[in-house]
Length: 74
Length: 167
Image (cartoon, rainbow over all chains, first blue to last red; front, side, top):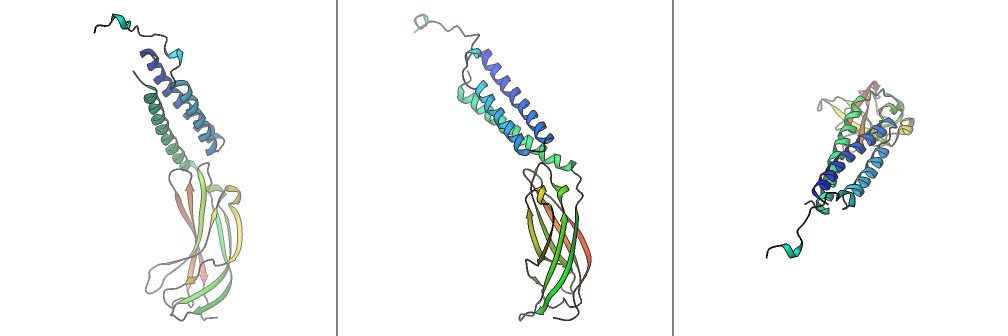
């Protein structure tokens, strides 16, 4: 990941978790099912992990230009 | 540069913190529930009433306990523990509470019932004070949550009386 991607990943992670938590609580409370709240939230956590933790290519759209090894000073 | 492990850790920590917040909210939501419980306890029969060799009075009763605790159940209720206690006063003790029967109500569907039973636990006095004794039968309940605060309350039924003589 590059610096921009890192920022996007962290932001996405926080937003996704909060949104899933709010939806999970609202649905669970409305249908009076504690289990449903936990189920929705747990799937949300897994989905968020899948989207934000691995080093996906779309997190690397502003790659850093490292110097070629031969150009580095010894 | 954040590593895979760093991101995974950040996610797990945040997810668990949010879970804790959801559980507190769920527990707080129980306060919006206004329960309307009803209960009645009848003493159908005094089976026997004796003084034990160790000097303590003991009585065996047949009770009819009928309750409707379905309004106590919320989405955050795991079970309701209910028990009936005999309460009376003696010269030695300002308050005696003897548990006669208890049960666990696992769901709202089971919360409205009646039961015809002898006392599950022995009604034994500390001493020999039960002849002619007036006592209350109090139905207590503990609403046990899936997460958070437990609520406990009771209904007092008074006007019960033990025989003047052993039988």
